[in-house]
Length: 281
Image (cartoon, rainbow, N blue to C red; front, side, top):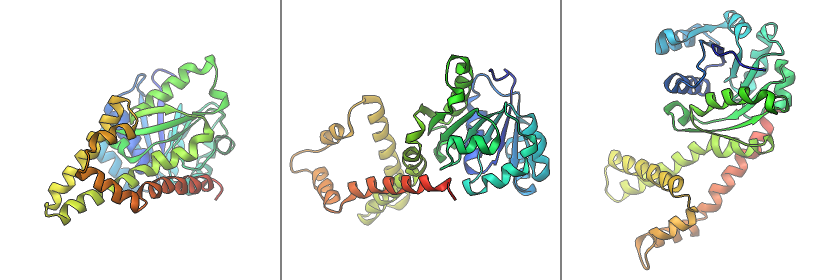
């Protein structure tokens, strides 16, 4: 099986995540690049908004007019909310066949469940996050058994090229996907809470809010880059910041006293538990 070089990409549910992937694909132009891109939405207002935003690069549709883009698609990105997915699929059921490649962004929906619902065995289950819109997202990909093997290598490569446009794509077994949903999908909200707390600490000590916000954001960006480029364990890098009797160790002990480390780890655990139940609703 191969995806045509000039393939048609249809984003079924161009909401927050669907639009994030769309923006990343248009900006980074993976190889092969789709010859046609459809964006299917639920209302005329959202379709008009998308068309005005992306112009001739896409064709936006809504309601009953979503049928034809789904029928023409070689690759379909499912970008709708998990609880809306079955209803949306039912609306275009007649346009689906067993040869379409499905890239699912749905939290909680397992590969077998997706395959049964859309009638195709060619499923890539993806968890990405909102920074994808800015080309600095993270995505974790699991492939269905029918996409394994050398005969489907080019299909997997095309899928990974599409997904990698968000920033970074990694492959994991499906058993890890609920944890990835939490760590990758919910992680930005946890990080933003930490960023807000850092900024507000600076405000408390007299730094103007806008300056404190920029400092907090840059500190997080720089620290992330340090971890990625050095390859060292975060604990080793953290120890380099601490000097005997200094400010950093004092602040860290306060965080440990308040259970911040455990709270963050438990937040990931709780979100993963919720993710495992989403597809069952």
